[in-house]
Length: 563
Image 1 (cartoon, rainbow, N blue to C red):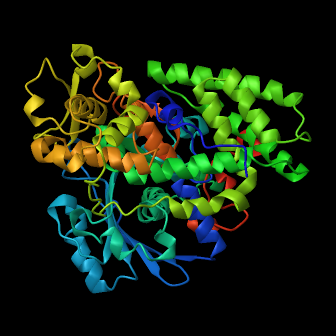
Image 2 (cartoon, rainbow, N blue to C red):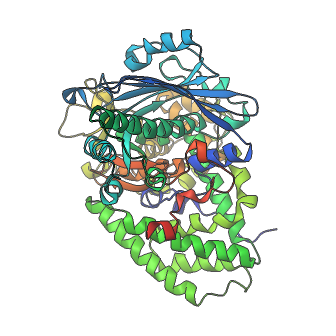
Image 3 (cartoon, one colour):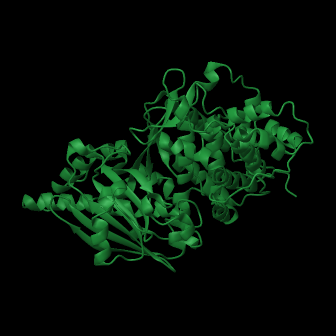
């Protein structure tokens, strides 16, 4: 039996550590591209009907072993005053749906009347996702004008932004009337979480590349010239941007089983690699190569937010320490990855530790990639409260899981300074100041630590051998907390073990944690409540995808980066 155990949830599930997670082999984008390549998916552009001012539609179809899926994209001429990244916006530069199958002309006509309206439109179960995107205006104009003049865009400007369009929402799983997840869960390509959304974004990036080239060609033709073709290397460096705010943060609290499965898969992968007794020369060579390639990403990562500036400084200092340590490290001795991991725990910040933990997985796809299939969860399951559980067992479970919460003085204003609510005006989750705004009556149940402490106190005078059902008959307001404690008792990584309503909470930690599982890189917070990221930067386009380039594209090639 292995001597290496999974890491303690009391360590892993603290917000500061969750906010230091990095992408890995189990990130959803990489799970998708590996599958598409290994199964030999075929891609084609089946329509591109866009006029000279950039209005029209296009269709991009992915053909898999059993099903085909089509991105139906609508391009719009959006006035500058109508451009907004807010959820409540009503117009966008482009709107999209991922269609189950190959759409007919009648389907496209129906979609053209609905998808551009987003929330105001109507979709059916043939639509798997609905999304929208806006241009990065200055970079878009720069690329179009340079190509139209027969020149390539400036790479410094490309690197400073990283994308030509950014999505402001990608909705799936039944949102707006689209297909519910349970309708698709049996399809192998959608076993892992968020594969519908990741496929939509993957195809969206292809459309954006074609659209910017089309606009450059149109402008050049109007001037009697021929536009330059966008350099393939520059095109690959461009991803799809995303602006993510507080709306994503409650997801981790509202989907405890799903969150548990994500973290469990990552922790099990780390454990499996730490337990490897000997590393082969090929595995060591790949690891060292990816360490070097990672330096390119980290060196190019920029942010002006003070918290992220510090994290970046920590990560760069840790990377320098790792590089120095690896110069004298022997991979030929027993359990090299565990020794390297233990050294990191003793010598690096959580940023460096989690970066190294992700990178250690890279040579071992054969050992860890199967874990991606375990990351989904039936979030609609009705988990009944076990009423036969004794009060004593409940108290012990609360103490084990929420010890930090029992040590918190919940009467202190600083420990309950914030309150989560949904803004009626913006229709988005908000984190307000409890004692400065009239929001407490609208508070969402997103403080499980406080609730667990309240339950523990309510149980104080109840005998240990009484069943929890009897307690709940007297105190039904604690039902949701009892249920949650029982869920976390079976799913130890389901709960964030930190105060989510304190005066010092940084929601950006929740955002970064979730986005790391998507596969995002180069987080650029604009505050502690919203962040810009890039998806699929450096990835091959669908028409370039092959088993040779489907996996490690996340790490820029050192030779390409230096040219």
